[in-house]
Image (tube, rainbow, N blue to C red; front, top):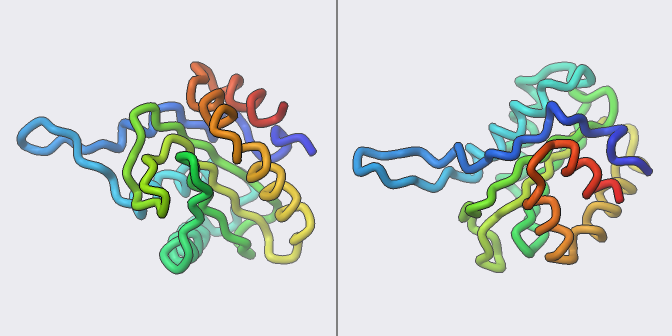
Length: 160
């Protein structure tokens, strides 16, 4: 299964660190988990398969508030099945510095992969989720994606 069927270069952000907010002292402030999910929803909204972006965003936030999907080794995979998506679509964001989102393993998050898909297409949704989870359980695989300089390199790293 080719990941490129569900992910385009336009939905890959190599600068998630830009979410670090400068406060009055000039220091960066860690973004909240909700801010990261909102950012991922912004990327997902660029897909033509999203029916109602506002509802999709809220369903993704609610899903991750109930049960955040931290996969370990600096990987966060927010996902939701929703009628607001005509078919499976994905977005990816990379933080080279790492962001503390409260993962159970206390590792900073370097890679965020968001997925939304329709409620009626379990098989494809689960196949892609499983494939990504298996591939990225290796910290070196995550490092290859995080080290990418171009969105196309991310696509190739996730597809290989």
